[in-house]
Image (cartoon, rainbow, N blue to C red; front, side, top):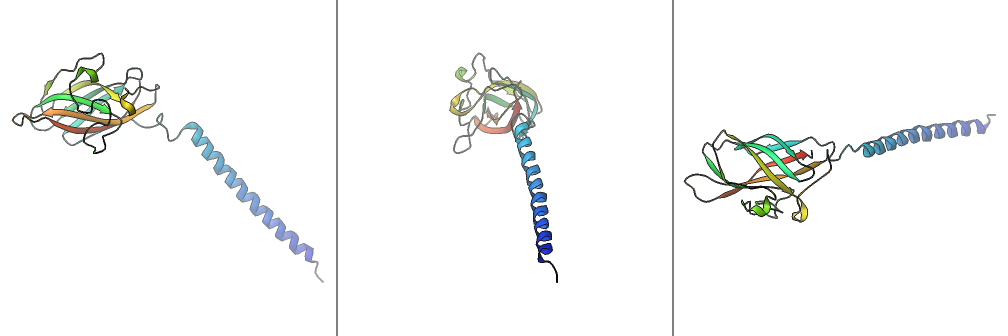
Length: 182
């Protein structure tokens, strides 16, 4: 006759081994998730800077000042014609329709109100020409977007320009941007 306690003991041992194995695996996954959260894998300090322009424009160098929120941006245009730059704007969001900035210089004008401590002058920009722009970036509430060193500003660039012979200014979102505060 066989002792039935032996069968129970081996099943109990198998159950305990199973719980320990999976428990250790779950604990390791939990520690990995906490570690990734602590180092900030998905935060603005680790996001790569980019400037994604529309087909008629290209971005050169760019950076944003952490204290003033001023974006320094090198742009070139390739529309095939000269354009007159009437204004430039940088904002974190578009308006509800998506055709102009959601905050700050919403009409993309040369109004000095939107260029604190600076003067924006209208310029002609020839096709293939690179120009340097200094423009404050606005965040929610129409406040100039400042930030900590190394963190990022993510938003959009709009340009108000007139093409010769058309006379009507055109406002166009020309790029999306993620710039590190320096």
